[in-house]
Image (tube, rainbow, N blue to C red):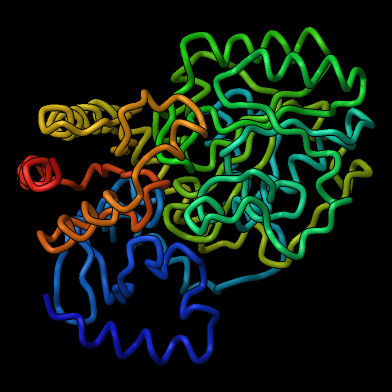
Length: 423
């Protein structure tokens, strides 16, 4: 596989950007390769600058549930661009998107549009603290909630990929009120609540932990967490930046039947453009400025182009209910190929991840037991076969509606080949 142009561009990029990239996982360090530089993407494929094509299961780390360059989304965005790129003023489309989200996810009674998942989480935690008058936050080992200071401790995603337990440059006093529980272990939450009685503002969780691979919640874990927080007057925040609109139209909260007090959304909500959302109960969100004292603002919040992409994407998903049925079928084929080939695989809906460990992966420590050198070998094998997966053991494999049956069968065949090669 020729990647000379990617190599040349990477060398040039390293002169101007740390590691040559704008997000660490893109540097491919965990798989000991140089990154591919992408020229374009269409449907279920991406194309690099050297002319190589790949079936894409990264899907821009989740937003691409419809695949790339969906004609309805592209047409709407192009038309919106003709009216101007940014106004810094209210537009009708912001309300249209908010109403659409609220109709699909009823817990989102009131919301605010922002630009990234990090910003959404930072703001939703601030809203929880402002409403309760309390400072302490419980998060879970291995769950990633963006790179704001108070969340950048015991996180998954890039920190786990880079083997960094917490980020340098984050003062201890920024994380002193961040308490760490074990994912899928309700007793660890109970112990933290007991030892910090009356001081906890909220519990924040990825309902499916999708930043340490893919780790689904144990049966009743989310239900028990909901009851525990309610019984103790603690707000429950679902970080659905990944799971929102992916597992179901109503996200993980619909999929598992658990209603949080607050939610952060991103990725699919912006249709592939920089947009995120936080919101939830009206009485909590009415404390956000300008009607309340919890301050949050942004020059590009509610950007009309990003909002347009979000509206069109959610309209397509809501008007074509068969999309989720099809995603389930496609994902089942891949899951079966993994299992039949000796892989230890976790799947929830259209999120998958193979692990290289004999342990059942239900927690952060289980995920850490995976042999990352074997994943490195597996990644390279798949890439050489034209299958583009995450360059890290600790990220998800995303299936899109644009993946054809042929794409799925080709990938399943490569997985079976990889099984023979690996085991």
